[in-house]
Length: 215
Length: 215
DNA sequence: TAATTTTGTTTTGCTAATCTAACTTTATAG
DNA sequence: CTATAAAGTTAGATTAGCAAAACAAAATTA
Ligand SMILES: [Mn+2]
Ligand SMILES: [Mn+2]
Ligand SMILES: [Mn+2]
Ligand SMILES: [Mn+2]
Image 1 (cartoon, rainbow over the protein chains, first blue to last red):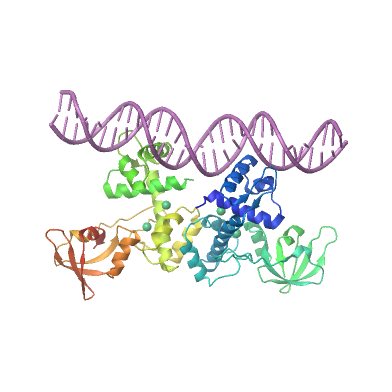
Image 2 (cartoon, rainbow over the protein chains, first blue to last red):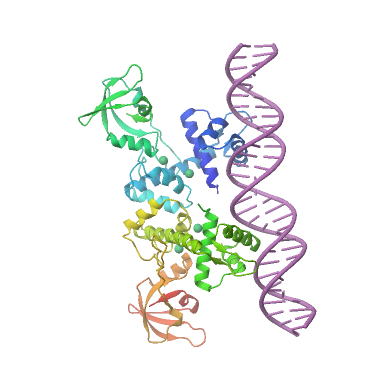
């Protein structure tokens, strides 16, 4: 078994690799808020366990085994978020923090039961795909709202920021997954996007638009 | 905040004090499967945090603060067991192991939601009382089945062993909480109890009868 | 290409949780 | 009331996870 700390490192490596392609010690260090020497020594430990390919001064890379382990943690996290929302009645801005802890529970029985009760959901409340029991993960390539052009009509399918501050910002604007918006303007200078949906018109800053994925 | 380890020590101290009155380092050591020197040093740490009264060579005792902390962990454990059974559909022999981990989740929101969904249950699936948010715990004084006499009719209200082996033994005999049994015989020599319930007759060993609490 | 800055590693050291071996205190038996 | 046994503590190690300081490599700039 892996420790909670190890699981968090694996998950972070998976996310950062997905997001940036290449992960350096410094990037991981900042992401986890852990100093570089600590990260270096953890990478050596994970390399000993054959979960990470590690060579001094080279980018970090999960091994095949490491990817699988990371995905099992991600699976537990996302199933939990879905469970918290659908079964327990939490709202989408409350689930991430709790899931951050429950993802480390060691009980296949527990998570399989969640999966069953939820009828094998494909995505979590933020639109991120849930890996299956085999660790397979289908990542649909979605565009950012901030990359859309005037007059396009798109559906909000996922958010890449799960902090409660961000989600409450969306709540105020009644933006949820599934909301279909039409872009009526993109500001030349600051790239603020103006969208229309459900008979409303709202402006979305470039920062926020960059964290909304659409289809 | 306390570590998982500290929480487990506090819970163990609470249970053993309830069961034995006085708790020694050796008893706690055996119960937790941790060597005595380790227990001694943890007791010193908990004493520094004012959770335990500790004096060399004297019995261990939780402080008022320690009792409260212990009960909050017990509350989380028992709410979780109830939730696993009633909401998720686990059986009573599956819940303890999972609850042993979830009891360490730090999220009042999460446990309050469980409490609400369960409509503020008074006891867990094994009949043990659930402390309230203030840490108050009503312990009804129940008798052991093994202490009952011939011709008494009593209701099974709680079990003091929550291992799956023990509970499956009861499952085979269709003994659940609420089962009303009449004692038809107590063996003179080995104290095996013969009981009748639901038109069936079964023998219950002294060992098992000592772990069934009745009213 | 040489100097400087940035990035990453090594060394050293800390706290938490555990153990074994040696020692001390308390309890028990003769 | 000693002598022995049982229970508990102290001392010294180990492993996990972390960080500060010193050092080394790589990247950038001039
Ligand atoms: Mn999340
Ligand atoms: Mn986590
Ligand atoms: Mn239990
Ligand atoms: Mn526990």
